[in-house]
Amino acid sequence: MTEKKVTAAASKKSAPAKKTTTCKRTSVKKTALVVNAESVGFRAGDVYQTLASAGKAMSVAEIAKAAKIGTEEVYLGIGWLFKEGKIKDADHLFTLA
Image 1 (cartoon, rainbow, N blue to C red):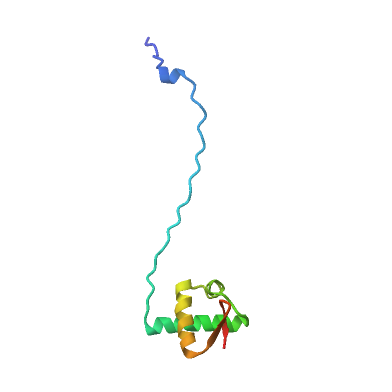
Image 2: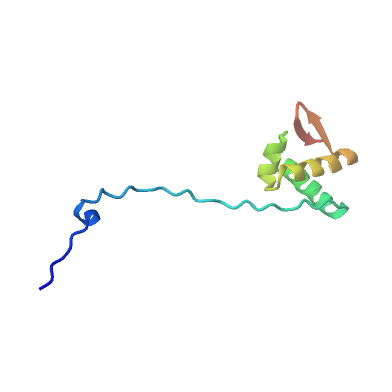
């Protein structure tokens, strides 16, 4: 008959396992901002429609959130609309002219 050998590690009682928390990593997609007459014109349309539907003066962040576009795209659209005289600025809030 063979005897079981007890090792030092097996003879010690193991401590309860610690719970570890893991953070979910979100991937951020970097998209290139296309600057040409067509895309800037579309962003100007987005900004114009957002201001028209809101019926009030809005900040760049509010326009970006409502139109679901980036702030850089809002600035492109605002520049286009300023050039055409379609919007005006009052205390960093934009409204239709």
